[in-house]
Length: 275
Image (cartoon, rainbow, N blue to C red; front, side):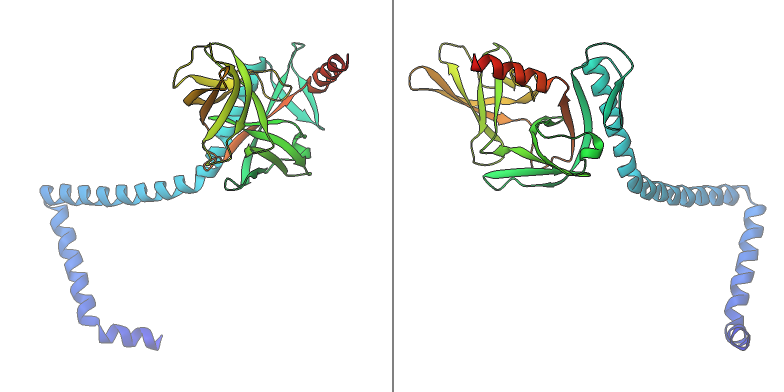
C-alpha cells in the first residue's frame, strides 16, 4: 500500500495529465462526427489485425489435426473407390457392408523415420499389428509406390523402401502394357531401371510407368514414374531409366495396402510353378 501511495505521489502530475488528455479526447470524439468515425475505423483495424494474428496462430496449431482428418477422409475414399464398400477393423477382422468381392484394404499411416542415403533403405511407420498391418503389404503414397512391409510390432512397422537393392517390383508401360522387373539403380533417390522390354516396342520419353498387377502385393496400374532415358542393351531389350514420381525425401503420409486374397493367390502360383 505504501508503495502504491509513493508511486501516485511521485507521478501524480503525469497521471493527471493522462487523465485529462483521455477526457479531452473522449469529449472530442463524442461531439465530432469526423473524429468519431476515424476512431471507430482505427479501433476496428487494430481489432481486425489482432484477430487475424490470433486466427493464424490457431490455424497453425490445428494443422496437424486437420491433416489427420484429411488422411482419414482420403482413406475412406480409397476404400470406396477401389472396392465400393465401407471397411472397418474390429478385433483385427475385416467387416464389410456388402457381399461384393472386396480385394484390397487401405490403411493410413505416417512415416516416422526414413532413410535414402544407403543401399538398403527402410521406412518406419506409426502403425502395427493393432492397426491390421502385416508383413508383405504394399506401401504407397499419393505420388507413387514406397515399399513393402517387412517387420511388424504391436504399434509400429518397418518397410523395405523401394530405394533398397533387395526390392524388385513388376512394372509395365501404361501405354502399351508391356511389363518387366523394375529396381532401384542404387544411385540418388529418383531413378529406377526397367528391364526386359523388347526393343521393337515403341516407347518415348515421358511414358508413364505403373505397377503391372502381376504380383500379390501391389494393385494394378499404381503410379511409379516416367521414362527419363532409354537405349537398346544387348540388341534385344531396352535399358530404361525411370524417374520415380514419389520424392522419398518428402514422404510423410502413406497408405498400407492389404490384399485379402494374397495367400490364396500365392498358394495357387506356387502349386502351378511346382507342376
